[in-house]
Length: 531
Image 1 (cartoon, rainbow, N blue to C red):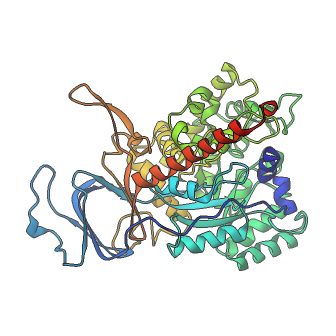
Image 2: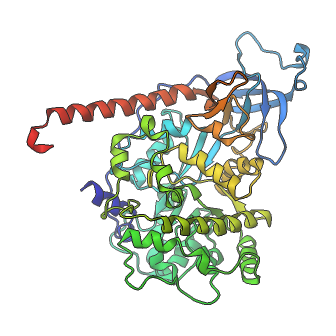
Image 3: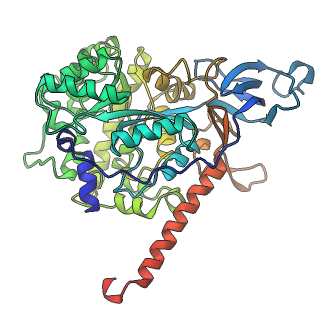
């Protein structure tokens, strides 16, 4: 049953029939974080903003309540700071010495599912992993825990009643509708009803083109966001050029893009015994798809790229969620699994023919080689898109395919650098560009006076090595030839509230160990015949 719940949670047919999904354990009342303060001064850090500016520091950042009041440059690197040139602290002000550290805007995860019943992931586990990696805003594309559940957690997060990032709730198309949506009128009425419920946008997998277009246009008219995973079941009728023309806000993953780049075919060249319900077929064949598209730099490649940029489409590639396809062993044995992956989530990842994203029935060297070439071409397009003015954001899609929350987001940042992004461009994609896409850049996404105080503090320079943002840090050999770990987000500040990121990660490790202990006890108390 656990695996069947997973299949239902992601299948497009489930969404349009309105099957109700069981929500995960809700988040408890907030017991973490200090503040907000009437006045908080962050002292002496180097600022890495997301505006395109290079780093500068040392700076003192003044926060009043939950907003940034001012950013002061207070000296020069390697020179003792003159105390007379710094913002003066009053007797009731809180000061935090961040000398030698780096401060960045809070990160925005644009593809962040809040766990699921099948994964056995309570909301507290998911939220603390996100916050402890500097993620202060997330977009839940699909709201698979139920619209009311997600909107309630959105409200509680906004009020800081729970330890959680800000939440944008996108409803999966057709959720809670009585039967499939088959007409344009039904599509528009459903969008209007969800707008009244308070959702921020919608996620689509595909539908009849007339129905899909009506829904996207209605959402756009209402100022609501739209995201689409152009599933193979429907991409033959509408690829990303079609949906972008209708007003789609973001394209998720990469499905629909190679199809728009076809020159000598109209459909993917599927193997002749292909069955979409066989997940090995689905993902192994997908690894051959980019080679079927127009060549990089060709006239058609450039024309599609420019059309999508002109239409204002944002691409949210989620490179990391497919990373196991090109190196299965490395992702399955990632070092953070031991301490941070719940045993129920590990079970969820294991190969199973009935489940989505668990297709490792006989994953071969050839499959990995195909996917490495897939990545080469895919990354080339994404970097080209960025270089010609297109917007690219950072999304993780964690909770599937050996990816866990927070860690997957940092890996996505690394993969953007692999694609050709400068680390400053990576930071911008992970913060300001996400905020712009969500229509929140007047509030979050950069460190500027008047904006909300959402910030990330790390003891090492992430521009030199993005790995220092992982909860497990990075391995380094020091000047004494001794091995040590460095990094890990030190503080995450959301709405002026200081969260000890190290303690949040410790809480998660404790949850994982308790779950493992409970499972061991269950096994020991089972009758011998049940082993």
